[in-house]
Length: 277
Image 1 (cartoon, rainbow, N blue to C red):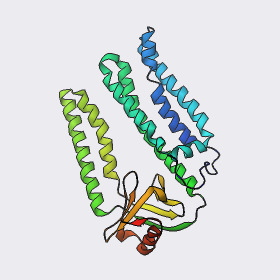
Image 2 (cartoon, rainbow, N blue to C red; image 1 turned 90 degrees about the vertical axis):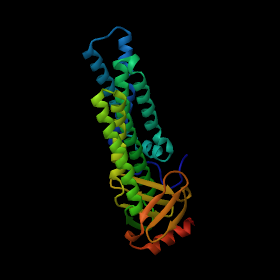
Image 3 (cartoon, helix red, strand yellow; image 1 turned 120 degrees about the vertical axis):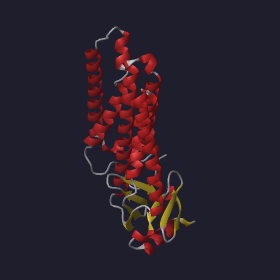
Image 4 (cartoon, helix red, strand yellow; image 1 turned 30 degrees about the vertical axis):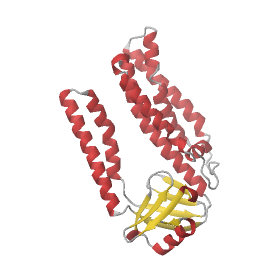
């Protein structure tokens, strides 16, 4: 689904080496592991040769991808304009699951696929966030700002995130420890996967800047930017504690009312473009 908005041709950037490098790392993590079973299938069993082939494939794929995408900043913008930006993350999860399921039969090849799948997941998240940020920057370039406000999450929402994040991180830590003591690989791997999720939930909830333009609402985070066209937003609710903007797809946007400098202007801007729930 392509979102409506302003200019999406990649802005004025002539190159984007960082996006190319991260995308190259992602493809390298995905394409390098199959080299191990292929070489084992033709009789190559020396560990150093398998290791060299794995690293060589990763470096070759990563370098070629980085070179190809660095000079095409518009590719990141176009990816960020659609929900397909999360497809690499989904594929990486499936990749890791297949690698884990084949640990018993594929041996070192399955182990490599599992860990490279986890690394590809992290790289895929980075690709999605970077693409989303570049799309937000391109679509809001030169747009007239109607209003802006800066606020953190409402207290109640922050409390829920802390509870859930703490529970997930705690369960992950205990699971990993039990797996290590009783040599249960499944518990150890599950704990390693869940802990980052809990940590992310614990570390979110800080200040964000909302910038309203005629095309939509941009959310600026410390390390990322997101853009929502007005038609992607449904309605809004405002009370003494929170301003909640509902999305037609995905989690709602929540802000602490007390931290918004001009609540009246923010409400007027939303009322002109959204329905009041």
